[in-house]
Image 1 (cartoon, each protein chain N blue to C red):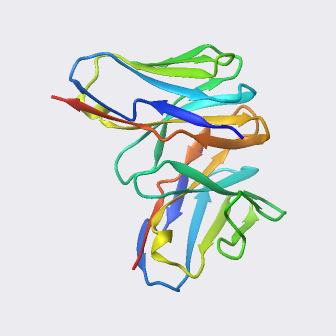
Image 2 (cartoon, chains in turn cyan, purple):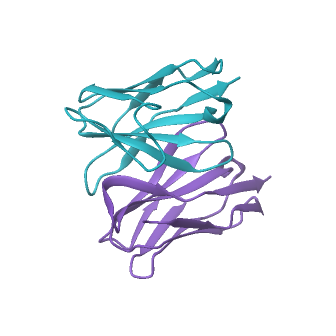
Length: 114
Length: 115
């Protein structure tokens, strides 16, 4: 199993500012994922963060808005840039083993943009 | 593109009742299917993982089945308790044009168990 922590757990930010969310895993993993869960909705994958290479973004998400860092096999950050109220969501970090592994999630970061 | 549907969207039952949550997916070329529980404002807790070669998994009062050929999974909860009240999410890893490691989630079933 994997234990994942996220910082901050929640934040209230003003429109136009940026917030960086940290994700720490207690073991080395190849693939880390960032999801967004908008109010009342299910999870949508933002990007896959691979150590040593650029993140891979899903349709509708771009690097300028959601830059991701993956400096090592246990840590990643997601930045939400130039925030608007539409960015108010829970952002979740997850890890999984390629192919046949169980997926583990962090506790999430609840972001409110005013 | 993989699509996952969960039915019903919401379910309310009296305590002690047995219940079934349904999940369907469009592309059967999956690696695995995972059921999660999410409490309000919280992250996701993994309940059961079914590999693509398996038919079912059991944990306590929970039993999940997988019929890959028909693109369906069910989560059976026996003798429901108020503490089971939560949103249950189904996630499928893989599928047509979906790489390993990437999961597609259903919209969830919100379960309320009344004392």
